[in-house]
Image 1: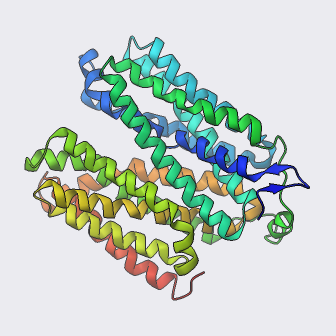
Image 2: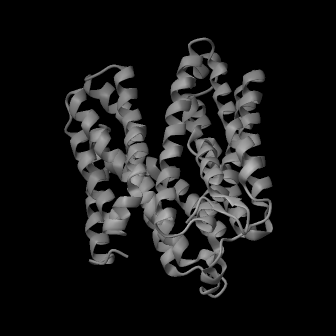
Image 3: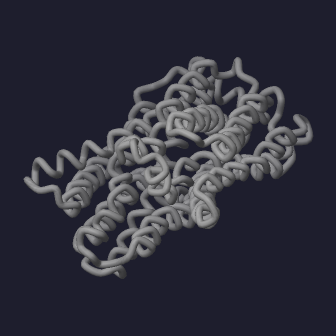
Length: 394
């Protein structure tokens, strides 16, 4: 597909850049991870759980708002909706920078951030479904995944640097949404303009009925996030429990999961063209292998290797599930993407349940069994999906 559709005046090159910039907000909740201890020290009356909840609190609003966006679907102006979400992300950062006198106030800004993410991400991914096709669409899902991981890495890194000056300065990293906001206003069409042939394909699915397959791929994504987030939430605890590294080294290991998520997304399109839906099977295999290595690590080098391998799973499972779900109901792309994003975030919410299950099975509060359980479930998932998807590429 050409970079510019002259008939519809859609600048696909500009739209591609816009989608990448919009994606920076998707995983932005990680930006404040480096200042949770400082916040706890600032508000000593608050429990550790209340402080940690600042990172997950936005997701309650992400799920709710993204579902609302999905059900409203084509009645929403995508340019205005995405721009409003990006603006709210920036406002949440400025608000927390200037007004941070209580934990309650910080919760307000976290809620605003969640609303912003819930507005932006479904629109961002639906733009891919609407304006890209075939291999170009698969590539874009991979690039979008990479961009969200890169955004999280940059925000977390810059947040840590700003925290060395004052913890509340970390919130200024949310101003990184400004380029995405400006590009959205310039390149996202004010009215939906489907490239030639796209409308006809969408009409072929009886007005975009949601088939069982849509829910299957959303469910696979939810399962993946449930298992995957054992990594980011437990690596630092494993390092501390075994005394094999410093806090900085533990942070590096956690970041490596995001780095390979970014790099793996860049090659997703080419990989999917070769093995199709088995990118999901491969992703679950890699997640199992990565977690087995982490569980058996007694020094930082194998821990780093395990984190790198586990991170690839996110880059290949999520884009494939998203693209496959959208192809089953192209006329309801916004709703499908909203449902997908919501279920994936529900999986993230439920991840702590594996901690309790691992403790009950192992009769121990040790961190290692959490990775062992997630590895076993990932391996079972890979066995199931290799049968479900058969030997066909599509």
